[in-house]
Image 1 (tube, one colour):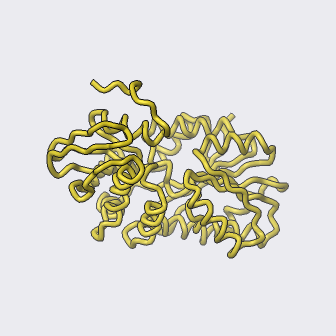
Image 2 (cartoon, rainbow, N blue to C red):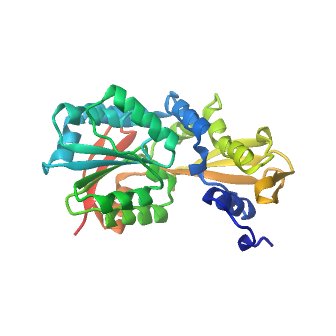
Length: 324
């Protein structure tokens, strides 16, 4: 019997790795895929022909720039454009450029858990769009949102793109949206990127490319445990496996142990035992339709004001505000 209280953890990473590898079934959080190497692998994933999500959202921004930015500016006056999980900002730059060129009074406030990503974004914006005022904030979404809320009274437009909401099960998504709503004023908007249900094969291909980039991205969490927590995972002895359930709209990623093996994690002073073909669940990627989004919004105290989609209807951006 493992007693989670017996170990003193220095970081949330240590605590969650220990809990995840002592639970049954085993699990690790996809948020730990991202470090310098993980960030680079995710850039590679977004560039893959099979990974349609980035291109679809990019095309929405390109084809509806005017309508989207008009919505953001509708009230006039200064507003903060807050992006949760900003990444490299490639898509957002389309909107930033248009807002800047049209004299919008705004501040761009990207939030990310990775300081490395924020540094890269700030440097690229200084070069490409020097007129855009930017304030980066490192941390989890709600820590950073709380801080921003406390220090500013400007109207907010909150961007949550890339179907990041899909990393949450429905009950978690409702909880997340309720927390966002609690930080929203009447005139604030939530601009939500959401992947749509579609041909199941298209979805499987996006999360299990033949070149193995997605597999390397998932396995990066094991590499991080090795590097940061003194682990001795043999990464090659784990198989990346993807499944998709078209009924629930849930894609799931697993790392599967190819054999019986024992992994030692030095910093945590414990050993994880794996049976042959035992799994570590690493990620979910939820797919949606209008009905599900309306239900999530209603449960969260939000309402859908409008939506945008790409020409192939693979993906949607919904605009939500507080319901009263």
